[in-house]
Image 1: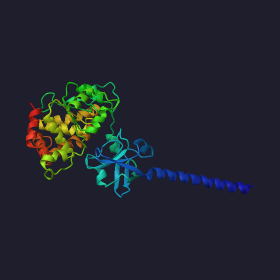
Image 2: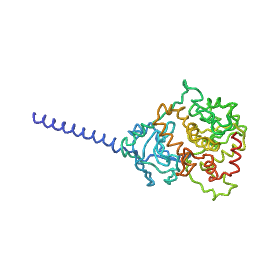
Image 3: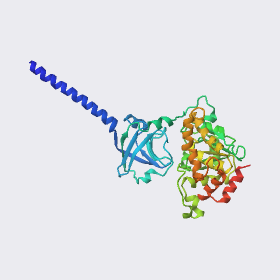
Image 4: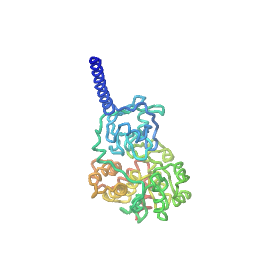
Length: 394
């Protein structure tokens, strides 16, 4: 009997050790060999990327975290290695990332302000993606340094701050000729009705950078649409819907397209920018420039207009960075390190793009000259540029 108990004790003890070993192996699998296999993908066409069809919350519940390094392999063989996973666009312009941006339906692989990764990878809707953890928390310092959020609930802040609405009185711009804001028609962030009230009787023409015509019309037909002033401008034909991406560095050879047809065939960021500026020429101000948040696409277009109007370096930088104060309370006094990083990654890169000469001092450059040269290189005529400048400046 004693011998039987001894055998049972040894057997149970061995099983308990095996269980501990299995638990340890599972833990290692979860942390070091975390794999999401054969996930359905779709083409994110607005900015040119790849939706991997799992929600941000569900993806994170699997054990992935913002700041991780990941490898992604698509079923067609295309691979992305050591890819940072962030909740915002914290990589440099032209660098790839996986992003779980608040409000996105799924996690998204793309190139920050770059070409369409879906096309680069030669993917089809039938392809799938497999994601494997490469290194836990490798990019966590960047994630923590740049992690920023804003609220979609109006609290005690002024409406103008909540709607990211302001007049752009810089350089030689006519007083109150140019405004910028979040969208007055797309209410996904609960700002549209507020912005609509702010622009009433101030704005005559709207340059909508985020929507196409179908999307714009769809906004006006939603149950929560409450922007009567923007609707009145839409019905008058005083809104152009450009549906721009954010690839402001894309190159376009203007010589390959006949000038007569160029504006109808050029769907690049620059081509749509020129369409928007021509719309301003053919319509009277005051003008409103907006995208969804009124941040980057709006920032680039306003920068070009401000440059044409003779704005200084500080005026251009300050106007762009007000957005980050409005949304995130980030300014030179509150969070100087984040302010500097955001400034250098975004508005400085935009200025460098229009100057396109590393030998030029970006702080003292003749922005009017370089902005004009930039637009002409992308297909806008000198006559149209001069007409626009005359229309918006004192």
